[in-house]
Length: 244
Image (cartoon, rainbow, N blue to C red; front, top):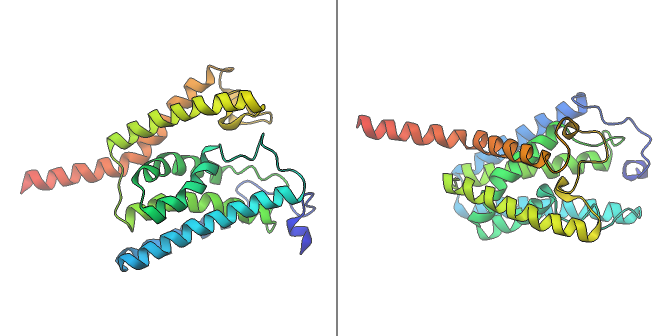
């Protein structure tokens, strides 16, 4: 059993879009579908399920930090909750508990956008199924993706055009703050101070700081894609009103 929590895992490495990857994605689809069925439940039940999701995310993320600490690899340069997904995982619990709309806006656009990218191209390296890192990664990012959908479908929340603007402005302000923190502690959270040290799709982009503009454009496109369901919904509602 200890090998599944080992730092130097000797089992099969993670294979992008291999059987274990596809199985994890399908499992998350089923989990999401099952959670959406609480839409017809009482408000008390829907709230309890949401809080349970938030607490599970906290426990799962805490386990990730404890695992790193146990093996002596926890450090402020890589494991502070400053990356978008890490920060939003912690905030999700408060979103569920307090039904916080501001957190929902950021979780919907930033959380879903970041989570889906990581779920499709997770950086798991040697940690294939059934290592702890495999489970922890897919549960963390999978539930981060599902959380705003749950708030939308089950709890009745929805973003607006103003939400998109607030998230865009807020994200840029946050990037500026993280840029300063990175300079202070020698980190590179959000990759605003430089490209990843390992090979990534960002290698195709211009050098720093020009690639940040490309990331801004990609972010806006991602936000717009995520908002398409509400554009369609609003258009249909207008057509119904006009034809009445």
